[in-house]
Image (cartoon, rainbow, N blue to C red; front, top):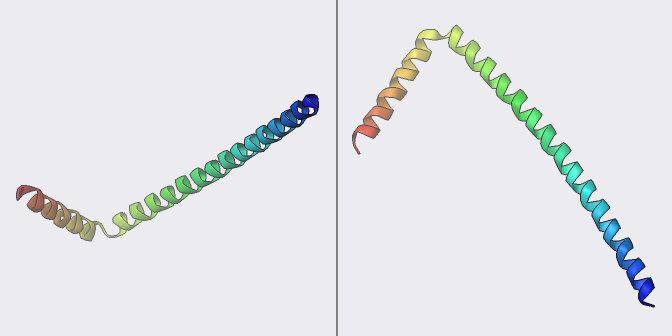
Length: 78
């Protein structure tokens, strides 16, 4: 009788190990897909920002100067 329990335990152990590896593999693939999507979106955002700044150079410099002034003002009051 104990031999059957060992065989059952071995079967369930191997099955759990197989399902665990499959789950890890699927999670790894999903993480890779998400990583590629994030890189693609970041590159698109970078391109759009670069194009905007080139089209609107003076207003971009004004916004950057205003942001710098605001940050300097807030940091200076500490």
